[in-house]
Amino acid sequence: MKIEEVKSTTKTQRIASHSHVKGLGLDEAGNAKQNASGLVGQETAREACGIIVELIRSKKMSGRAVLLAGPPGTGKTALALAMAQELGNKVPFCPMVGSEVYSSEIKKTEVLMENFRRAIGLRIKETKEVYEGEVTELTPCETENPMGGYGKTISHVIIGLKTGKGTKQLKLDPSIYESLQKERVEVGDVIYIEANSGAVKRQGRCDTFATEFDLEAEEYVPLPKGDVHKKKEIIQDVTLHDLDIANARPQGGQDILSMMGQLMKPKKTEITDKLRAEINKVVNRYIDQGVAELVPGVLFVDEVHMLDIECFTYLHRALESTIAPIVVFASNRGNCLISCTIESILTGCITAWYGNCLASDRKALQRVVRTAQYITGAKLPAIQDLYTRRCQRKALKIVKDSSHPSHRLFSLLPHGKRYRSAKSRGTEDISSPHGIPLDLLDRVMIIRTMLYTPQEMKQIIKIRAQTEGINISEEALSHLGEIGTKTTLRYAAQLLTPASLLGRVQGKEGVEREQVEEINELFYDAKSSAKILQDQQHKFMK
Image (cartoon, rainbow, N blue to C red; front, side, top):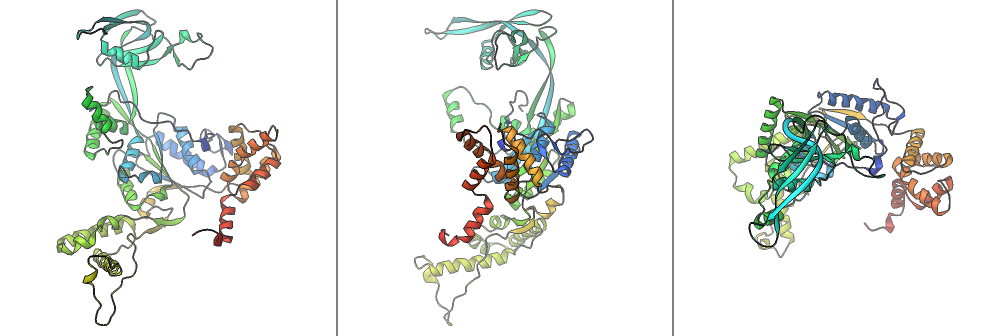
């Protein structure tokens, strides 16, 4: 099982809409400041998020869920990102949108489990025997190619390492030279080489070279203390998904067939539950031995109402597992429908196979429907009723289609009428608050966000202007606040950059009220556009 030398696949994502958010803006007592860390207002919601952050830090929140509920444009995503800023880089934070689960390559539940595993970190602490120091010499020694020909091969590498206590010269294997090249090691870099595996890690440039250039994008580290050959505690942060990927796709050989096999593999592959169970066993053993520490992170699911009942059922089970992150949902919906797929899964091609089922099979299928009914809290039709309706609907289609091979099998009844069925949907959707099933909603802590006041909108637009480097007058700022009150905060914030560009074209140094008014006349907000569509719907195609 590969746990050593697993490179993290976690990506740092920058969201321009919330780049001004630096934290929750709480004081030492946990009370929210009115305007701090890029957040304005929502004091109650921010204080509640601060308590959630403290629970996560104390590792008492694992396997629980939080719902940020409120109207659109009230800062739900900003609060989730502020929580991530407060937790720091060491705690995994995995953002996703509800629509991401719908993929043609892998199952919905597999996408959810991947993100669950991305949000669970593992901090591995190991004491390794290493050679550490500043590189003073790096000389590859060449020899004649034993296979013949004109080329030469590297027989060994001479490397010199220096610390605060002394220097040491090492003779390394040629395979380690390849690792040195991959890490782009040069003279003056601080590195360490593991004695057992020969793995090379470049830590940075030695700080004695800090004044070598006026401008450089290097990370400088101090000269290591102690001996060159030492025992060092190495801490590596990975996620469980990194371990899944490392073990699901083992590296092949260097021959042409192995390389072609790697190229022909699909980009997305499902990781089996058996492999994950094996990885969990190894992780639990490492935790029991004190070698590793589990770091439950945060999985943020925005637009959670986009999920269907199958995903919610899977989330319900995943939250109860022993290794689970903290899940933060966000939804801007009130009472809305949850898309159901249980019926369509059970009744695929039901007209072909249900008539041949034994009575015991039909009872077993009906038990599944009753279980789904218990989970969703909604009344579902019986399998027998569905079969009858589907058969009637199928027969109706055949009767209407004179080219169908079975059309001749249908004839008029003595009274000259045919049996027709009412139109029925393939799935019966469920109405629920926030688009979440009641049984899952019962186990989440709900944080409510309120609409912003005109003064708060004005402060937020001012922060956005400072973030984007736009000079805006007080009069223009007040006018944008009024526009945000009549329309939405998002629309008002989006007018900033066009107004700045218009002012630049007109030779202005900043944004004045005139530029804001002109830009507002050029563009429509969602409410105005919807009103035009309603008034002039006869002019548009349906």
